[in-house]
Image 1 (cartoon, rainbow, N blue to C red):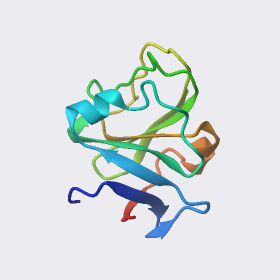
Image 2 (image 1 turned 45 degrees about the vertical axis):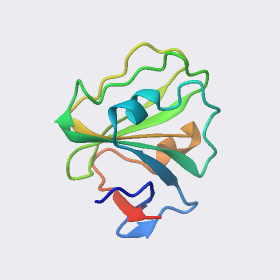
Image 3 (image 1 turned 90 degrees about the vertical axis):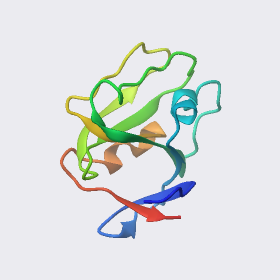
Image 4 (image 1 turned 60 degrees about the horizontal axis):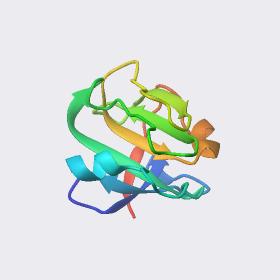
Length: 125
């Protein structure tokens, strides 16, 4: 995928219903900032952290400076869900069970939209 600023999330090339749009964070700085000192995401918005390669260490996250819960979904290089967790405010570290290349952070009510093992599509928004 090219340097698209936003993508929609879907299955089988169809967007989720209700829709979920993710701001793509590909740089060190945008991934590092995440939701730090930001308001909570709405049900239809979130972030997609895109890493150059799959890793457990690089895709681990922290919630230091974040004062609300988030659904965190880890996807491998094939966009298959390899782990998912609810992150709590000020939680020190969350590490995926398996190597991931993509991390989705969104409203905690979207947690059940994702199941381990399923393939997720990124659709141009």
